[in-house]
Image (cartoon, rainbow, N blue to C red; front, top):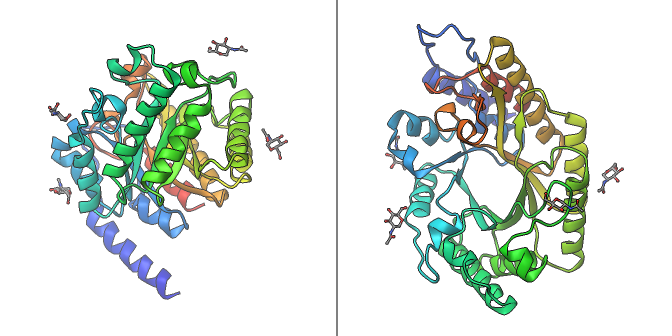
Length: 352
Ligand SMILES: *[C@@H]1O[C@H](CO)[C@@H](O)[C@H](O)[C@H]1NC(C)=O
Ligand SMILES: *[C@@H]1O[C@H](CO)[C@@H](O)[C@H](O)[C@H]1NC(C)=O
Ligand SMILES: *[C@@H]1O[C@H](CO)[C@@H](O)[C@H](O)[C@H]1NC(C)=O
Ligand SMILES: *[C@@H]1O[C@H](CO)[C@@H](O)[C@H](O)[C@H]1NC(C)=O
């Protein structure tokens, strides 16, 4: 009771402090809620509501002002600066400058970090893929990369995406330098190295298209089951959640998450956005609000869903327009850093 009174008082103070004016030039519907997202998530028993960010964005003072607000965001994920090409651009030459900058921002503003990512087929420096490594050589390369990066950030990362996107949509393992050289053993090699380097970090496999029923989620359930049976450390599965407008199935999403958590792992929405085919209409923005509510509500319904991360909070820095031509407006804040109806949708989900 004392907690809820204190929280309500704090919320009303924050509502006064962060109340936004609507831009006079915009005719689009905006958000009306002033409830901050991280506090709402934590009030609902979750660990965090967070956002991806990226180093080039950190010179944008209005953007960083919102990002810094710990009532709004309690967790950060670096979009690029902890990936292999940024961290180990040449063999045994490590560069932590970009990752350190985001960790410092998180530490300075009381946020936890998701480290993203250690082993992925994409954004690899040329030296990794240019040589026909033996299995022993590539094992050592993975161990050195994982051990050095995780050790550098030991104690500063809540959860690591140790393995990123290992599966094809048809449920087979993705063919890449790691799988083609080592088979699926590269996954346990990386997970064991990460555990040894930071025993307290949660170790995740992160993947897309686990939101829908089908061979991919079945294969992920099998993979987690196999890793657990072999005693390989695995603590969580990241459900990326890059949605297309109107394609949310709460029942499939929830069932898939429960299939994973029943094996003794956490789940999290790690890269949430809901892209719209452009131009977005007011009706689209209302549908997007509804989609965000539905998705976030499912995390509330699954006890071992620890938190939600949007793949940047604003359309200004969304990856969608460049990666999915003709689509955009996927984030809860618009390009002018004004909250969209989707913001109210997230609050409704967090308070469901
Ligand atoms: C390390 O990374 C930073 C950030 O990307 C970059 O500016 C810098 O040039 C890099 N340092 C070296 C020695 O490559
Ligand atoms: C954001 O927080 C960091 C870390 O405390 C601080 O150095 C920076 O000045 C803040 N930036 C803004 C725009 O508030
Ligand atoms: C599964 O998908 C991958 C990637 O598209 C493809 O290369 C492979 O042949 C497929 N395997 C089966 C059994 O369909
Ligand atoms: C997921 O759970 C459903 C309902 O309990 C079950 O029918 C299905 O077989 C499970 N899928 C997997 C891959 O375990």
